[in-house]
Image (cartoon, rainbow, N blue to C red):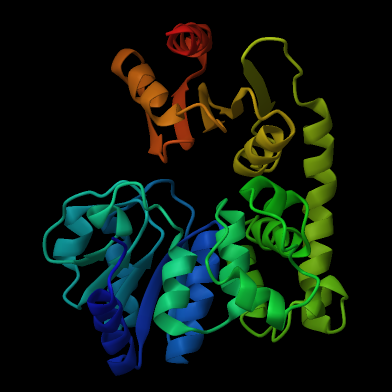
Length: 342
């Protein structure tokens, strides 16, 4: 059972009553595409992109105090602190698809509450709620390795952007034009908070994906140009990615490079589907990893690592984040190898 119709109607009703929502969203395509759909649905409001990791903490309560919204919405954020919730006086709607957590005084909508195997992206549920921006919803889903049940409607409206015979999410992301758009959105979220929000504001004014793909408007040219800027750096790092005969494909790059861990791990998994992908960025004695596996459940492995090593992490069964001390790298690899052998 998914987020049910009663819950969807509840969210629609709250959005329909709101004239000044404040919307927090994760800094990936799923989060951004979810925001764009809800923002267009309401027609008013403000977005706040989160570049702080996995938790929306009490420090962000001041954003609520400053803006004085009539509704607070949280999209695709895996963890929201109870302290933040307690400090916010307004109604809070939180829509997510990560492993459920328990919080009080919040309207929490997550398909995994009803069925833990249903981890369809927040972009999918934003589409079910709003029925706005079909191409944006499709891009958000494909970026999150999901092919939605509205793909046929999408193909009818946007001919040539998706291939009917594709049922593999990796193929959808790396071998279709909507997948290219998803990656363009991802790279446009790079940079400072101000840089990212500028790109999101421009995306909110794009009426057709061909504005970007064919660069037919100044807005589309801006998105395309920023993608190209970051893509050059990305391709250089991708070429350096380690090749290995073991079950683990490990690549670590320095902090002075732009963060591409999620994008790199996804593409490396597409190219090496039989390996566990471990892509990390080293900073100040800590490494932040994206961990991926096509047929390897990485979440139990990450949990096992954190039983032994100092750090933090979590996510989905086949896609996780993990942060450990740099000095523990050899120990990390030993634990992972042992888990893979079991």
